[in-house]
Length: 494
Image (cartoon, rainbow, N blue to C red; front, side, top):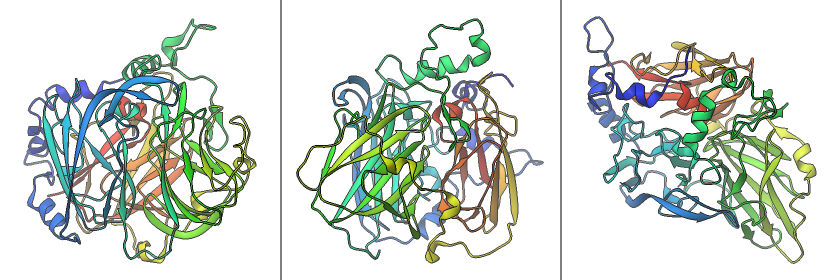
């Protein structure tokens, strides 16, 4: 299977008429008809969501700007010239009205990662909306019904590997537990403006290892060789990043969170990276995991967490007296991002110090159970879609079931069904798989999630109730694997 330019594919024939693609799919009498983003069923599903009736308005200016990473200064694309973008925080049931103003020299959209929202607001270009062109605006409006830790980013090319991302926190006013402080921590791998752009990285990767023959001893540019992690089942990633960040800062100039000793703090961890899993630990402390991907779990203590791209974890920590590093080890890549937590006097430990917690207990999915209020009711799946993750670094031909992305061949589901998506990894690399518009329960009785790591030779089942009509992407959240073709569509039958 040769490499394919997904954007060129969409622009030719199949997507020549923009949103006309949506109406064209399934138009033949012998083919199924699909619920479209503008269908009345999408509107009805939105009207049925629980709402406070309150509308919160925001403006997102996507712009090119100079950003100080704490020493290194780069030119990149951001929302409103800050990194990460400004946090959007609302209450469960609030209506979010976000006006995107595109000042970039390229098309863009906004995807609201993890939210079960109306299909026409999902931000998937040429599937749920037309891309927002330079100089244009688009207003996203939807009910944020489910509380939790979410985030937003583009779904256009490899723009995610620039600075276009920000947290979205949906508060639950009835949630138990009093916290003295609450912090949002965004992890990222960074290359834009530091020698290469993400588009240049993708162009190099597309050549594959097969195109690198005869280059022994030569500079491989942004391509990463020899990154290995037992936790990830082998190959840890494709891209050689010069920087790893927490809240937009390199480890040598870390952001500092301040509070008092014995304060109980909730930390919301978001991996906004494009090619890196992070192993996260807090020096001198254990962390109590309370949520994953926004949904509560039975609380469990751990020394460290492995967080794939797109995943989020909420943890609670009661802090000691002193200065402590919050360290995010770039798994298999030998570098770290870090922040500092200061509750008293003292000097911080060296940036090169290795935390013993990183080598301690690491909670896995098998250790976590969903809280009773979010556990799916037992039910045999009405339909199962088996998705083999395929491809290799040799040709950089990532796909699903041996094919690159084809929006004209949705995987059919019907409203009211219990759906099982079974991911089977047939590659030698790990893949964080994400399903839009739904939260699934993994492996029968595991936690509720919207993004799940699938290791090489591993099979993971994802069950959800089909209660959000439309056409929804399912893809690898490695930005480069996605753009190379590891993506498909779940479509509701009309």
